[in-house]
Amino acid sequence: MSYCFEIKGLDLFYGEFQALKNINMNIEEGGITAYIGPSGCGKSTLIKTLNRMNDLIEGCKITGEIKLFGEDIYGNMDVNVLRKRVGMVFQKPNPFPMSVYDNIAFGPRTHGTRSKAQLNQIVEESLQKAAIWDEVKDRLHKSALGLSGGQQQRLCIARALAVNPEVLLLDEPTSALDPISTGKIEELLLTLKEKYSIIIVTHNMQQATRISDNTAFFLLGEVIEYGKTEDLFAMPKDKRTEDYITGRFG
Amino acid sequence: MRNKRSEGAMAAITWIGAILTIGILLYIIGFILIKGLPHLKPSLFALEYNSENVSMLPAIITTIIMTIIALIIAVPLGVCAAIYLVEYAKRGNKAVTLIRMTTETLSGIPSIVYGLFGLLFFVTYLGWGYSVLAGAFTMSIMILPLIIRSSEEALRAVPDSFREGSFGLGAGKLRTVAKIVLPTATPGILSGIILAVGRIVGETAALIYTAGTVAQIPVSPMQSARTLAVHMYALSSEGLHTNEAYATAVVLLIVVILINLASTKLAGRFGGKAQG
Image (cartoon, rainbow over all chains, first blue to last red; front, side, top):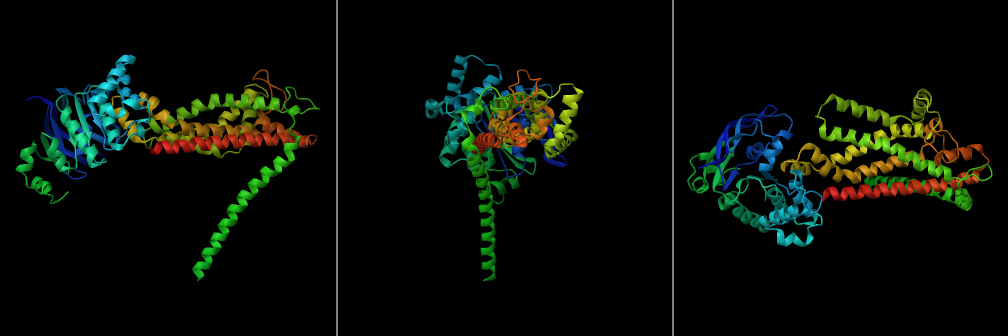
């Protein structure tokens, strides 16, 4: 079994507040790993450490080790290269205020792709992978802000795929969407997991059971339980996990 | 019952306030149009100014040149300062507090003080004499706080989610600012620039001290020249061409109204965009 991420002894502080406590976790390559837990339990914080988005937050301190395919991401790795290799989709769809085409082409252009033909190909492929090509192919050069919320989120997934990442991080990607759009994105993730390692933060336990292979349950900055999704939901080992998944708190 | 009465009184007071405000504005515009329009003749737009025909065309051209030079100096400086404040400076940084305090102080200074400074520094100390250049530099210092302030507001209005999206794709700070943040903030920055243009067009005191009052088209930026507002002031203070002064006021009024409309329109577009 090979791992995309190996996390060892990770502690994270926002100023004085410790948001993550001694996280140790290996994340399988390929497949979908879901992070569940009540609000404020540290699941979103952890996912943000994986592509160093928390660098942007002032007063955020990290100790411990995170390796991406064996390389320490807080060591010598260029943070922009890291973020190219580890793509991210955010809770609220955030297409740039430009055309659909330019949204997708922004990443490849950032990393040096200039040829028009190559960009055209990347844009089409990425949109097809994100299952939104048919809906936008006639309006590639119109503003992306005119799309529906669900379409915008799939566009953001396409945008992340366009730089050819190895891992895809999704931070509650469907929490702002209606059930039909959510269904489409879940289907999409199931097809994408063949090619990418996917880590998804979700509030929705049904979603975790529907799509993930492994699940980690977080509480107050700690990983309480981490294992195969069917095991975790069918026979939770920890009382707190059981309480959470049966809806006794959270 | 008493409640109702005081509510009625309040409504009446606000009504009177609103009507008075609009009334005064309409009165001024009407007054200037009635006094000025009949005297707005084609001869006032002759290339040459002389004592028989006090043409305002040289002043219009000077105003345009002055505005362009002042913007060339102030816009890059002001926008860069705003980018530093919003995108680069850390919170609680001492430099930020200092820059904010400076811009706030600068924006509160009466324009005549800028004029005196320009006279001492550009005209006398640097030896530029009364010149378009000295006037333009003085104007650029005067509008700098306005441009910094409006650019800062426009940049802050760009949602952080755009920055996150860009960083998340592996774009660096420079690229994020240049390709995502700045284009999104452009309408807001532009509306600030247009307001600054309005201040230059309407300025007199600071310009009389720095650019002088020569009424011809300046051939070089080192020559003295008068803008439209200065021209109007000169005509009315000389007292020989009051009618032409009113005609000039009509042109000035129309320019300022157009500038304000353009600024409001851009700002409105910006607001709509930021929400979408």
